[in-house]
Length: 184
Image (cartoon, one colour):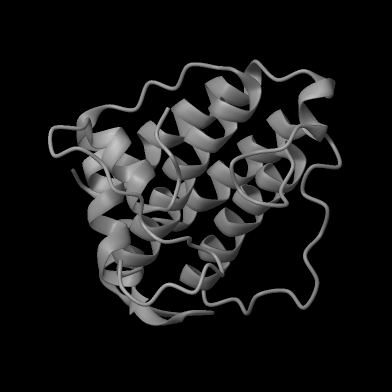
């Protein structure tokens, strides 16, 4: 699966989850230690804007704005649009300076898409929703994570240790376990 297809499928997935949120959901805790649904959504929107800006040659802002000020649906729509607009074929093939180093645009979009897929699972678990991640999309995320977040040497800052899982687990469960979460 190419990064643009994965990004577009992930946008639809996250949009559907956000559409089902109520104001009460925003204070709920998520599988990400210390993060509420509101915090998680702010992280996801901020990440999309950061990668979009990096691809367009913009330095990250010194202080992140409150992306959720007008509500999660508008925030996600704006973040997803910014990322999609930045992810042109030319931008994907060029190298860009990101806060985590210089990488091809395709790698930057793949990593933020993997982040969004992973957090879509977090959002669904936190709010009691079903998450329908195709095997292909889960495999894409797993392949994006492995080179940038190896299983060895994790400190728990951002990623907990990978969780042991049965060999015949679904692609989504393998992704969830690799990122240090307990599959449901």
